[in-house]
Length: 119
Image (cartoon, rainbow, N blue to C red):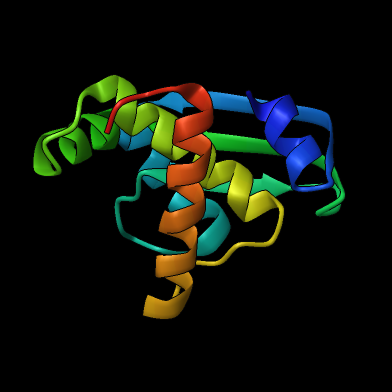
């Protein structure tokens, strides 16, 4: 699915690694690399470009479970959303403002549909 998405978004994936980690490990990474003392569900570390993706993506399993419960989703759907979210960050989508979040959610939904996951 990610290779198909890369073609649609006119990118290539040279190396893309997803790590599924605990809340504690995610907090450690957030502190070490972003100096944020907050929990988060995903961190992306791009090393390539938007057109030639080389990256690491870290997803907190604990936060994904909480998100799934909060948004009344299955854990599978939430994980697909997070995998998609990380990919979209790598090709340039942002989520700091409401406008950016709306665009990100719309693109996430497109990617989820590529996975054929019911929302």
